Length: 136
Picture 1 (cartoon, rainbow, N blue to C red):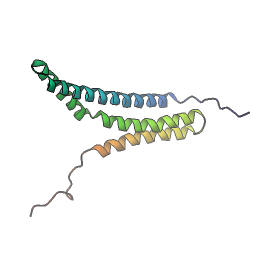
Picture 2 (picture 1 turned 135 degrees about the vertical axis):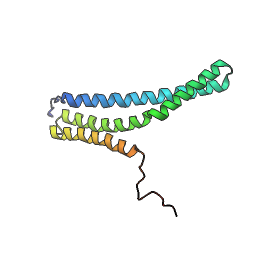
Picture 3 (picture 1 turned 90 degrees about the horizontal axis):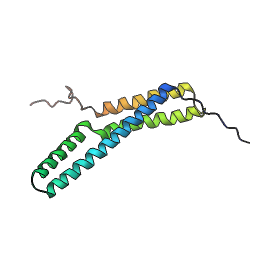
Picture 4 (picture 1 turned 90 degrees about the vertical axis):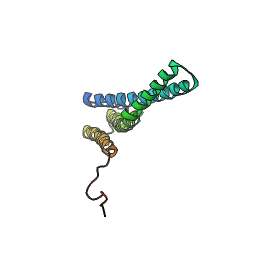
């Protein structure tokens, strides 16, 4: 008969982080689709109609597309889903005794670093003295 390991409780702090990252990437996903679909639908209906409703729908469409451009929920999704995947797998492995607490905490750090790296990669590049063209 094979030996069955009893599940080990994942520390509350780690569980809270897994839940928070999951909530954040799901919220970003819903926002991305809701504003995108509403914006496109409002634009299409606005183009097909006349009168005051057309102008109102055009405004709704513009606002939805502006929110997508400003808030960029697709980028928020990517950074949090990457971190969540790292920590979710590590929490599962910890739960069944495949990794130690130290390795689980390293996964928390790795997830946080993934978020930070993504945010740093998305910042606009600053012009430095080396890459600013000189005037003749």
